[in-house]
Image (tube, rainbow over all chains, first blue to last red; front, top):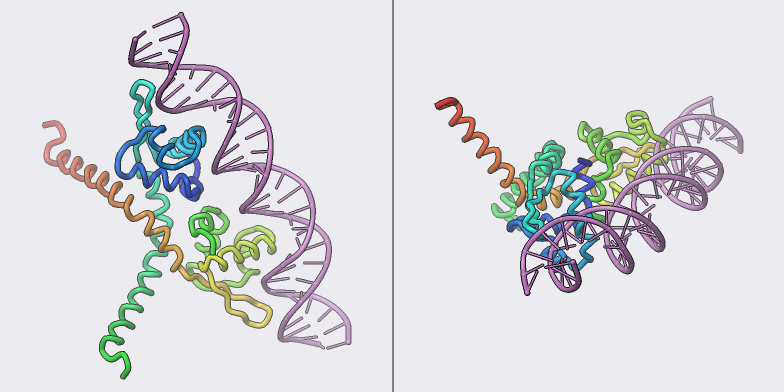
Length: 106
Length: 106
DNA sequence: GACGTATATACCTGGAGCGGTATGTTCGGG
DNA sequence: CCCGAACATACCGCTCCAGGTATATACGTC
């Protein structure tokens, strides 16, 4: 289970997760949606699976992949201390806009 | 300004940002804190700078690096749709614990 | 049991990136 | 004006990784 950061750093894997957000999908389905080769998709799914971000359910030959967002919380946790920083910036912007509304060209 | 995801994927760069969170620092300071070579730190700072995540202020030979967390919002934005997913899981856990408290062995 | 479907794995290749050493550049101090 | 401190850049070597093609494996169907 490698670093969630490195796993999500890849754009294709983010696209996979975005697709899975609407519900479980098979590999063939993902291949069609992504426009890359089937082995490439399988390897990305392997990485996601070993990171614990997706789970598999076997159904005959088909494998239904689904999201388990739990490991993504690690990213969120790391991001947390920074969130209030740009929140403050947005607050400052908001106050600035408030002042603008009070009198843009005073 | 490359992808914030790829920039933050590197552990050393995350350590740099964590160090800068307490306030601006010079390159030499970061080198001592990180335990890697000075050129390596300079290159990481370059990546962070080109991504817009840090800013520099020149002071004679010294360069004071500071955080600009704005680009990190992109990561937060991507993460947003997933956040409620594990929040739901936590809610479910909470409700489960509530039921446990009501009567664990009812 | 032969065949097609669905998926995984093995192997290869090109490119990107991190780390280091060596060197340039800028600036202040004596 | 020379020297050292602070930082950036050039270059190199190594590893990792994403993508592909070829192939193995499992399963349902007929």
